[in-house]
Length: 298
Ligand SMILES: Cc1ncc(COP(=O)(O)O)c(C=O)c1O
Image (cartoon, rainbow, N blue to C red; front, side):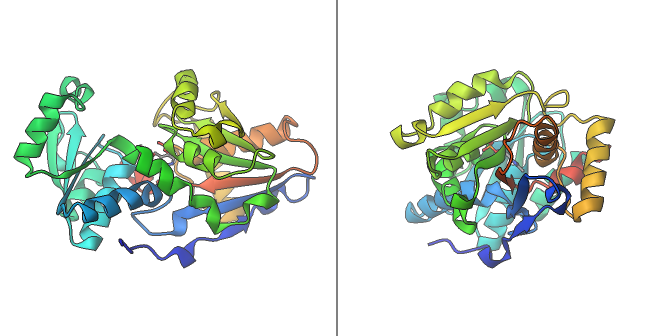
């Protein structure tokens, strides 16, 4: 059994800004779990690491871009556990000092292997996987973002750190949809689950999320909000940075601008537009990712 983070650090924090209206918003602070293996990242890794351990693998290999929270978390988790890690990084023009994320990953002992964007698109093809197995001595391979069935299984545990039945709406940021799928699987059909897409043109994600659900999950009411992307993945505007600052001033909670700031902006906007019926109790899940703010400072 892999034991690593201190779950007692996770808290539920009421957001006072919203308390004057008839809508109440609480934040599930998964970001507090661990400085580097924070938020949803740990939950997506957990069962993958357990399987790797069962299969007696001593190296974890995974994929990501230069600012990937998943690369950062995998490197830190493997370092903490005393395991080897390999990161296959999108962009053969990059170097370990191209971003804070890559530098940190390297400091955690991750071996970085840079490949072209074209090659990266084909990373799951058999020949390339065969090459990786040979070059890196038969590692345990975790897909990009930690988003596989074991990742979804881990995310089904996220709501056990609060009292989910108290909430009418549960909100979460969406990249691949694996985290949202785990949340959908672990809620009751009476609740509404809202995913906030961090990428542009995210409509295709609806099918992708649906495909990760069991029959139970399919009976849950969920929605993907696609209009809060602020120009696309890892893009930001002055309006978003101002919102992050105001949010910090009001709650002393830092948001990452890639995922959680967009979700919180969306919730705020929906409250203003009276999307939520009076008396709604909303849970916003803070999925971490704060290391990304350092890599993407400008
Ligand atoms: C901080 C953070 N929040 C949310 C997400 C979205 O998770 P998913 O890809 O499972 O939709 C990610 C990406 O993994 C992330 O790094």
